[in-house]
Length: 264
Image (cartoon, rainbow, N blue to C red; front, top):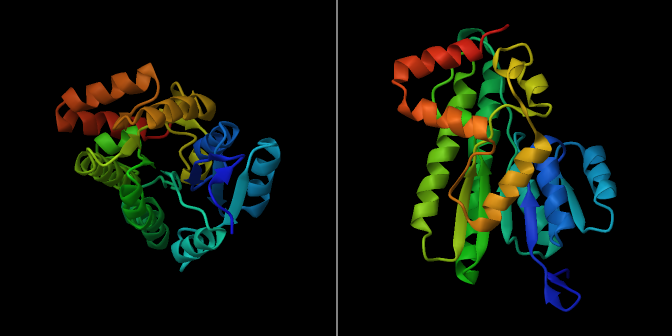
């Protein structure tokens, strides 16, 4: 049975969800090239295989899983259990958004967003956290967003899910002080991934502004994760935006976000 032992030393194992593109892809690759075994999950088996080829020489364990589908979380947990590995680093990155007036939205898609962005994240965290506490070491990073700091007209469910992830992560971080386990909330702003294609936000004013690369976000995320930072906001412009949102009256913040989420 595989273990976390490699070349006579303990090798950490990281589990990264949503590892087939964007920030998740870059984080999985960096964690693997940094000497960790990485369990990479996502819906696209071909992209998982490509990740393994790109991180040549590193240890990538691909597990195809659809966290929004029926039994997806259970299937992933069963596969991780069969691998015989303990998870030292959990990166809950899987998630997606959708753009448009809520009254005209596809309700099934909105409910699937809640399933992936919230329910799967909570279930995976609850599963892997107790063993980390027992070992008195572990790191969890939940990918929220700068969207988590304010309600989002034309993307109300997505913004609400990220507000949940942000609040949940910060509360857990406080609970776990002194246990040896850290929880970080990663809050990127607009990032150059396929998110805007899936969420149909390519033509909004938000994505017409400065957009960070997935590589730059992953670099900042990894530094913050390994430092045990509670809140990670990559990039000066994103930090400035979060500060502005925190200081602005809610009505003004809503008007700003409504404008940014409107089509150009």
